[in-house]
Figure 1 (tube, rainbow, N blue to C red):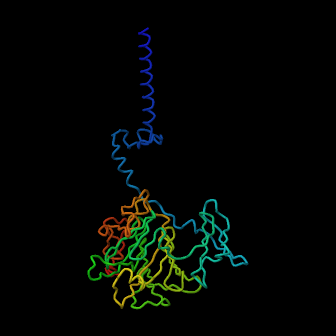
Figure 2 (figure 1 turned 30 degrees about the vertical axis):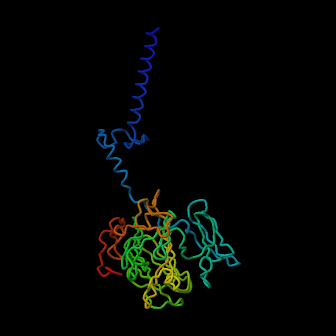
Amino acid sequence: MARRKLSILVAFFILLIAMEAAIARGLGKGNGNGNGKGQGEEKKNNGNGKDKGNDNEDNGKDKEKKPKKLKNHDESTNYRMMSPLPSGQERGFCQAKGSCQYKTLVCPSECAMRKPKKNRKNKGCFLDCSKCEATCKYRRANCDGYGALCYDPRFVGGDGVMFYFHGAKGGNFAIVSDDYLQINAHFIGTRPQGRTRDYTWVQALAVMLDTHTLVIAANRVSQWDDRVDSLIVKWDDEAVHIPTDGEAEWRANGEERAVVVERTDDVNSVRVTVSGLLEMDIKVRPIGEKEKKVHNYQLPSDDAFAHLETQFRFPNLTDLVEGVLGKTYRPNYVSPVKRGVAMPMMGGEDKYQTPSLFSTFCSVCRFHRPSGFPTDERLAQY
Protein backbone atom coordinates (compact mmCIF):
# COMPACT_ATOMS: atom_id res chain seq x y z
CA MET A 1 0.00 0.00 0.00
CA ALA A 2 2.87 2.35 0.93
CA ARG A 3 4.60 1.60 -2.38
CA ARG A 4 1.44 2.41 -4.29
CA LYS A 5 1.15 5.80 -2.59
CA LEU A 6 4.80 6.53 -3.32
CA SER A 7 4.33 5.67 -7.00
CA ILE A 8 1.37 8.04 -7.23
CA LEU A 9 3.38 10.89 -5.64
CA VAL A 10 6.32 10.33 -8.01
CA ALA A 11 4.00 10.35 -11.04
CA PHE A 12 2.36 13.58 -9.86
CA PHE A 13 5.77 15.20 -9.36
CA ILE A 14 6.87 14.24 -12.89
CA LEU A 15 3.63 15.69 -14.28
CA LEU A 16 4.30 19.03 -12.53
CA ILE A 17 7.82 19.21 -13.98
CA ALA A 18 6.47 18.56 -17.48
CA MET A 19 3.87 21.32 -17.12
CA GLU A 20 6.48 23.84 -15.95
CA ALA A 21 8.70 23.02 -18.92
CA ALA A 22 5.81 23.58 -21.34
CA ILE A 23 5.02 26.95 -19.75
CA ALA A 24 8.68 28.02 -19.96
CA ARG A 25 8.80 27.18 -23.67
CA GLY A 26 5.66 29.26 -24.23
CA LEU A 27 7.12 32.27 -22.42
CA GLY A 28 10.33 31.95 -24.40
CA LYS A 29 8.36 33.02 -27.47
CA GLY A 30 7.36 36.35 -25.88
CA ASN A 31 8.65 39.82 -26.84
CA GLY A 32 11.52 39.96 -24.38
CA ASN A 33 9.90 42.42 -21.93
CA GLY A 34 8.19 39.94 -19.64
CA ASN A 35 4.63 40.40 -20.85
CA GLY A 36 4.36 37.04 -22.62
CA LYS A 37 2.38 38.36 -25.55
CA GLY A 38 4.22 36.13 -28.00
CA GLN A 39 5.11 38.88 -30.46
CA GLY A 40 8.26 37.22 -31.75
CA GLU A 41 10.45 34.11 -31.69
CA GLU A 42 13.18 33.74 -29.07
CA LYS A 43 15.89 34.45 -31.62
CA LYS A 44 14.34 37.90 -32.19
CA ASN A 45 14.61 38.98 -28.56
CA ASN A 46 17.97 40.68 -28.90
CA GLY A 47 19.03 40.02 -32.47
CA ASN A 48 21.58 37.29 -31.70
CA GLY A 49 19.47 34.49 -30.30
CA LYS A 50 21.22 34.65 -26.92
CA ASP A 51 19.41 35.33 -23.68
CA LYS A 52 21.70 37.67 -21.74
CA GLY A 53 19.28 38.13 -18.88
CA ASN A 54 19.50 41.93 -19.13
CA ASP A 55 16.11 42.68 -17.62
CA ASN A 56 17.49 45.77 -15.86
CA GLU A 57 18.64 47.26 -19.16
CA ASP A 58 15.24 46.65 -20.72
CA ASN A 59 13.49 48.29 -17.79
CA GLY A 60 15.78 51.28 -18.03
CA LYS A 61 14.99 51.73 -21.71
CA ASP A 62 11.27 51.53 -21.04
CA LYS A 63 11.58 54.58 -18.78
CA GLU A 64 12.95 56.69 -21.62
CA LYS A 65 9.62 57.76 -23.02
CA LYS A 66 9.64 59.17 -26.51
CA PRO A 67 7.71 62.40 -27.07
CA LYS A 68 4.19 61.67 -28.18
CA LYS A 69 3.12 62.93 -31.56
CA LEU A 70 0.77 65.85 -31.07
CA LYS A 71 -2.29 66.67 -33.04
CA ASN A 72 -2.01 69.92 -34.96
CA HIS A 73 -5.49 70.95 -33.92
CA ASP A 74 -7.89 70.59 -31.03
CA GLU A 75 -10.71 68.19 -31.87
CA SER A 76 -13.11 70.21 -29.70
CA THR A 77 -12.84 73.17 -32.09
CA ASN A 78 -12.62 71.19 -35.31
CA TYR A 79 -15.78 72.53 -36.92
CA ARG A 80 -16.86 74.61 -39.92
CA MET A 81 -19.07 77.63 -39.34
CA MET A 82 -22.47 77.63 -41.03
CA SER A 83 -24.87 80.49 -41.67
CA PRO A 84 -26.65 81.54 -38.44
CA LEU A 85 -30.30 80.86 -37.77
CA PRO A 86 -32.84 83.68 -38.34
CA SER A 87 -32.68 84.25 -34.56
CA GLY A 88 -28.98 85.09 -34.90
CA GLN A 89 -27.79 81.91 -33.19
CA GLU A 90 -24.51 80.74 -34.73
CA ARG A 91 -24.00 77.16 -35.86
CA GLY A 92 -21.01 74.89 -36.37
CA PHE A 93 -20.70 71.72 -38.45
CA CYS A 94 -18.46 69.27 -36.56
CA GLN A 95 -15.67 67.65 -38.57
CA ALA A 96 -13.84 65.98 -35.68
CA LYS A 97 -13.78 62.19 -35.71
CA GLY A 98 -16.04 60.59 -33.15
CA SER A 99 -19.68 60.49 -32.15
CA CYS A 100 -20.19 64.15 -33.05
CA GLN A 101 -18.77 63.98 -36.56
CA TYR A 102 -21.03 65.56 -39.22
CA LYS A 103 -23.41 66.90 -36.56
CA THR A 104 -24.49 70.54 -36.30
CA LEU A 105 -24.15 72.37 -32.99
CA VAL A 106 -26.30 75.46 -32.39
CA CYS A 107 -25.42 78.22 -29.91
CA PRO A 108 -27.96 78.69 -27.08
CA SER A 109 -30.21 81.74 -27.29
CA GLU A 110 -28.59 83.09 -24.09
CA CYS A 111 -25.25 83.38 -25.92
CA ALA A 112 -26.06 83.41 -29.61
CA MET A 113 -22.54 84.38 -30.76
CA ARG A 114 -19.10 82.89 -30.23
CA LYS A 115 -17.55 86.37 -30.13
CA PRO A 116 -19.96 88.98 -28.73
CA LYS A 117 -19.04 92.25 -30.42
CA LYS A 118 -21.22 94.99 -28.91
CA ASN A 119 -20.36 94.01 -25.38
CA ARG A 120 -17.52 91.56 -24.98
CA LYS A 121 -18.29 91.26 -21.28
CA ASN A 122 -21.23 89.03 -22.18
CA LYS A 123 -20.87 85.29 -22.23
CA GLY A 124 -19.73 83.75 -25.48
CA CYS A 125 -20.90 80.55 -27.13
CA PHE A 126 -18.51 77.60 -26.97
CA LEU A 127 -18.96 74.87 -29.54
CA ASP A 128 -17.28 71.64 -28.41
CA CYS A 129 -17.19 68.87 -31.01
CA SER A 130 -15.43 66.45 -28.66
CA LYS A 131 -18.25 66.63 -26.11
CA CYS A 132 -20.88 67.41 -28.76
CA GLU A 133 -22.29 70.38 -26.88
CA ALA A 134 -22.75 74.15 -27.11
CA THR A 135 -22.44 76.08 -23.85
CA CYS A 136 -22.22 79.68 -22.58
CA LYS A 137 -19.02 80.78 -20.82
CA TYR A 138 -17.34 84.01 -19.89
CA ARG A 139 -14.36 84.74 -22.12
CA ARG A 140 -12.02 85.86 -19.38
CA ALA A 141 -9.56 84.45 -16.88
CA ASN A 142 -11.01 82.78 -13.80
CA CYS A 143 -8.41 83.39 -11.09
CA ASP A 144 -9.88 80.60 -8.96
CA GLY A 145 -9.99 78.04 -11.78
CA TYR A 146 -7.52 75.36 -12.84
CA GLY A 147 -4.41 76.78 -14.49
CA ALA A 148 -4.82 80.28 -13.05
CA LEU A 149 -1.91 82.68 -12.53
CA CYS A 150 -3.00 85.94 -10.88
CA TYR A 151 -2.28 88.44 -8.13
CA ASP A 152 1.15 88.38 -6.44
CA PRO A 153 1.59 85.59 -8.03
CA ARG A 154 -0.99 83.06 -6.91
CA PHE A 155 -1.33 79.84 -8.91
CA VAL A 156 -4.05 77.21 -9.09
CA GLY A 157 -2.43 74.02 -10.35
CA GLY A 158 -3.71 71.38 -12.71
CA ASP A 159 -4.43 69.37 -9.56
CA GLY A 160 -6.66 72.15 -8.21
CA VAL A 161 -4.29 73.06 -5.37
CA MET A 162 -3.63 76.78 -4.78
CA PHE A 163 -0.10 77.99 -4.04
CA TYR A 164 2.11 81.08 -4.18
CA PHE A 165 5.40 81.36 -6.05
CA HIS A 166 7.11 84.70 -5.49
CA GLY A 167 10.16 84.29 -7.71
CA ALA A 168 12.16 87.51 -7.66
CA LYS A 169 11.89 91.11 -8.85
CA GLY A 170 13.28 91.29 -12.40
CA GLY A 171 13.53 87.50 -12.60
CA ASN A 172 12.36 85.15 -15.37
CA PHE A 173 10.96 81.70 -14.64
CA ALA A 174 9.75 78.70 -16.63
CA ILE A 175 6.04 78.37 -15.93
CA VAL A 176 5.60 75.42 -18.32
CA SER A 177 8.30 73.46 -20.15
CA ASP A 178 7.36 70.45 -22.26
CA ASP A 179 8.48 68.72 -25.43
CA TYR A 180 6.61 71.08 -27.76
CA LEU A 181 6.43 74.42 -25.96
CA GLN A 182 7.81 76.53 -23.15
CA ILE A 183 6.16 79.44 -21.36
CA ASN A 184 8.35 81.82 -19.38
CA ALA A 185 7.16 84.64 -17.12
CA HIS A 186 8.90 87.93 -16.34
CA PHE A 187 8.36 89.15 -12.79
CA ILE A 188 8.22 92.78 -11.70
CA GLY A 189 8.11 93.83 -8.08
CA THR A 190 9.24 95.94 -5.18
CA ARG A 191 10.68 95.37 -1.73
CA PRO A 192 9.52 97.91 0.84
CA GLN A 193 11.87 98.83 3.65
CA GLY A 194 11.85 96.21 6.38
CA ARG A 195 10.64 93.38 4.13
CA THR A 196 12.69 90.19 3.70
CA ARG A 197 11.31 89.32 0.25
CA ASP A 198 10.01 91.00 -2.89
CA TYR A 199 6.38 91.63 -3.68
CA THR A 200 6.10 90.35 -7.26
CA TRP A 201 3.68 90.20 -10.18
CA VAL A 202 3.86 88.71 -13.69
CA GLN A 203 4.35 91.49 -16.24
CA ALA A 204 5.06 89.44 -19.38
CA LEU A 205 4.71 85.94 -20.81
CA ALA A 206 6.76 84.43 -23.63
CA VAL A 207 5.31 81.40 -25.42
CA MET A 208 8.03 79.55 -27.34
CA LEU A 209 7.15 76.89 -29.91
CA ASP A 210 8.97 75.52 -32.95
CA THR A 211 11.14 78.47 -34.06
CA HIS A 212 8.67 81.16 -32.98
CA THR A 213 8.09 83.30 -29.89
CA LEU A 214 4.86 85.02 -28.91
CA VAL A 215 5.05 87.69 -26.20
CA ILE A 216 2.08 89.04 -24.26
CA ALA A 217 2.99 91.84 -21.86
CA ALA A 218 1.60 94.71 -19.80
CA ASN A 219 2.94 98.11 -20.71
CA ARG A 220 4.49 100.10 -17.87
CA VAL A 221 2.23 103.05 -17.06
CA SER A 222 2.48 105.64 -14.32
CA GLN A 223 -1.27 106.25 -13.99
CA TRP A 224 -3.89 103.68 -14.91
CA ASP A 225 -6.76 104.48 -17.29
CA ASP A 226 -9.34 101.75 -18.04
CA ARG A 227 -9.97 103.29 -21.47
CA VAL A 228 -6.35 102.98 -22.63
CA ASP A 229 -5.01 99.72 -24.04
CA SER A 230 -1.91 98.74 -22.05
CA LEU A 231 -1.49 95.39 -23.75
CA ILE A 232 1.66 94.58 -25.77
CA VAL A 233 1.73 91.70 -28.26
CA LYS A 234 4.83 90.66 -30.20
CA TRP A 235 5.43 87.83 -32.67
CA ASP A 236 9.08 87.00 -33.30
CA ASP A 237 10.10 90.38 -31.86
CA GLU A 238 7.73 92.31 -34.16
CA ALA A 239 4.87 94.34 -32.66
CA VAL A 240 1.41 92.99 -33.49
CA HIS A 241 -1.75 95.07 -33.86
CA ILE A 242 -4.95 93.39 -32.70
CA PRO A 243 -7.95 95.01 -34.44
CA THR A 244 -11.01 96.04 -32.43
CA ASP A 245 -13.58 95.50 -35.19
CA GLY A 246 -14.63 92.57 -37.36
CA GLU A 247 -13.31 89.30 -35.96
CA ALA A 248 -11.06 91.37 -33.66
CA GLU A 249 -8.22 88.91 -34.01
CA TRP A 250 -4.72 88.43 -35.39
CA ARG A 251 -3.53 85.15 -36.88
CA ALA A 252 -0.21 83.54 -37.77
CA ASN A 253 0.56 80.10 -39.12
CA GLY A 254 3.67 78.45 -37.69
CA GLU A 255 5.44 75.47 -39.16
CA GLU A 256 2.82 73.06 -37.88
CA ARG A 257 0.06 75.00 -36.09
CA ALA A 258 -1.97 78.20 -36.12
CA VAL A 259 -1.60 80.97 -33.54
CA VAL A 260 -4.58 83.25 -32.84
CA VAL A 261 -4.78 86.30 -30.58
CA GLU A 262 -8.31 87.71 -30.30
CA ARG A 263 -9.72 90.51 -28.23
CA THR A 264 -12.29 89.57 -25.60
CA ASP A 265 -12.89 93.18 -24.58
CA ASP A 266 -12.27 96.52 -26.23
CA VAL A 267 -8.96 96.95 -24.40
CA ASN A 268 -6.59 94.99 -22.14
CA SER A 269 -8.16 91.55 -22.59
CA VAL A 270 -7.32 88.78 -25.09
CA ARG A 271 -7.58 85.07 -25.68
CA VAL A 272 -4.53 83.31 -27.13
CA THR A 273 -4.88 79.97 -28.91
CA VAL A 274 -2.07 77.78 -30.23
CA SER A 275 -3.77 74.91 -32.05
CA GLY A 276 -3.23 71.58 -30.38
CA LEU A 277 -1.08 73.04 -27.58
CA LEU A 278 -2.50 75.92 -25.62
CA GLU A 279 -5.36 78.27 -24.83
CA MET A 280 -5.06 81.13 -22.38
CA ASP A 281 -7.21 84.07 -21.32
CA ILE A 282 -5.23 87.16 -20.35
CA LYS A 283 -6.20 90.48 -18.78
CA VAL A 284 -3.99 93.47 -18.00
CA ARG A 285 -4.80 95.23 -14.73
CA PRO A 286 -3.12 97.55 -12.20
CA ILE A 287 -2.66 97.21 -8.46
CA GLY A 288 -5.81 98.74 -6.97
CA GLU A 289 -5.88 101.20 -4.09
CA LYS A 290 -7.66 98.68 -1.87
CA GLU A 291 -4.94 96.07 -2.53
CA LYS A 292 -2.22 98.57 -1.69
CA LYS A 293 -3.78 99.33 1.68
CA VAL A 294 -4.66 95.75 2.63
CA HIS A 295 -1.20 94.37 1.80
CA ASN A 296 0.79 97.53 2.59
CA TYR A 297 2.67 97.25 -0.69
CA GLN A 298 4.16 100.77 -0.34
CA LEU A 299 4.31 101.16 -4.13
CA PRO A 300 5.83 104.27 -5.75
CA SER A 301 3.30 106.82 -6.96
CA ASP A 302 4.65 106.89 -10.52
CA ASP A 303 4.04 103.20 -11.35
CA ALA A 304 0.65 101.46 -11.58
CA PHE A 305 2.41 98.07 -11.64
CA ALA A 306 0.29 96.87 -14.55
CA HIS A 307 0.46 93.08 -14.68
CA LEU A 308 -1.23 90.02 -16.18
CA GLU A 309 -4.05 87.86 -14.89
CA THR A 310 -3.99 84.60 -16.84
CA GLN A 311 -5.74 81.27 -17.02
CA PHE A 312 -4.14 78.45 -19.01
CA ARG A 313 -5.64 75.37 -20.66
CA PHE A 314 -3.44 72.61 -22.10
CA PRO A 315 -4.94 69.88 -24.31
CA ASN A 316 -1.74 67.93 -25.01
CA LEU A 317 0.84 68.01 -22.22
CA THR A 318 3.13 65.01 -21.80
CA ASP A 319 3.41 63.01 -18.58
CA LEU A 320 6.85 64.51 -17.87
CA VAL A 321 5.91 68.20 -18.23
CA GLU A 322 7.92 70.60 -16.07
CA GLY A 323 7.66 74.17 -14.82
CA VAL A 324 6.24 75.97 -11.80
CA LEU A 325 2.70 75.34 -13.08
CA GLY A 326 3.39 72.61 -15.63
CA LYS A 327 4.46 69.94 -13.16
CA THR A 328 1.08 70.14 -11.41
CA TYR A 329 -0.45 68.57 -14.54
CA ARG A 330 1.60 65.38 -14.20
CA PRO A 331 -0.36 62.16 -13.57
CA ASN A 332 -0.40 61.24 -9.87
CA TYR A 333 1.29 64.54 -8.94
CA VAL A 334 1.21 65.26 -5.19
CA SER A 335 1.67 68.90 -4.22
CA PRO A 336 4.39 69.55 -1.62
CA VAL A 337 2.84 72.82 -0.40
CA LYS A 338 1.50 73.07 3.12
CA ARG A 339 -2.28 72.91 3.19
CA GLY A 340 -4.54 74.91 5.49
CA VAL A 341 -2.33 78.02 5.69
CA ALA A 342 -3.13 81.47 4.33
CA MET A 343 -0.26 81.49 1.82
CA PRO A 344 0.94 77.99 0.87
CA MET A 345 4.36 78.55 -0.70
CA MET A 346 5.96 76.69 -3.60
CA GLY A 347 9.74 76.84 -3.75
CA GLY A 348 12.03 75.94 -6.63
CA GLU A 349 13.23 79.34 -7.83
CA ASP A 350 16.67 77.83 -8.51
CA LYS A 351 15.19 75.03 -10.67
CA TYR A 352 12.93 77.20 -12.80
CA GLN A 353 14.86 80.46 -13.23
CA THR A 354 15.95 81.21 -16.81
CA PRO A 355 18.62 83.69 -18.01
CA SER A 356 16.02 85.79 -19.84
CA LEU A 357 12.37 85.84 -20.78
CA PHE A 358 13.27 84.22 -24.10
CA SER A 359 15.67 81.56 -22.83
CA THR A 360 14.71 77.87 -22.86
CA PHE A 361 17.43 76.96 -20.35
CA CYS A 362 16.82 76.00 -16.75
CA SER A 363 17.93 73.03 -14.67
CA VAL A 364 14.73 71.06 -15.36
CA CYS A 365 13.49 72.57 -18.64
CA ARG A 366 12.47 70.06 -21.33
CA PHE A 367 11.81 72.24 -24.38
CA HIS A 368 14.54 72.65 -27.00
CA ARG A 369 14.57 74.77 -30.13
CA PRO A 370 15.19 72.96 -33.45
CA SER A 371 18.85 72.35 -34.23
CA GLY A 372 20.48 75.34 -35.88
CA PHE A 373 18.13 77.85 -34.25
CA PRO A 374 20.19 81.05 -33.79
CA THR A 375 20.76 82.60 -30.39
CA ASP A 376 19.91 86.30 -30.55
CA GLU A 377 21.83 88.25 -27.93
CA ARG A 378 19.42 91.17 -28.36
CA LEU A 379 16.84 89.07 -26.53
CA ALA A 380 19.02 88.77 -23.43
CA GLN A 381 16.54 90.80 -21.36
CA TYR A 382 12.95 91.84 -21.86
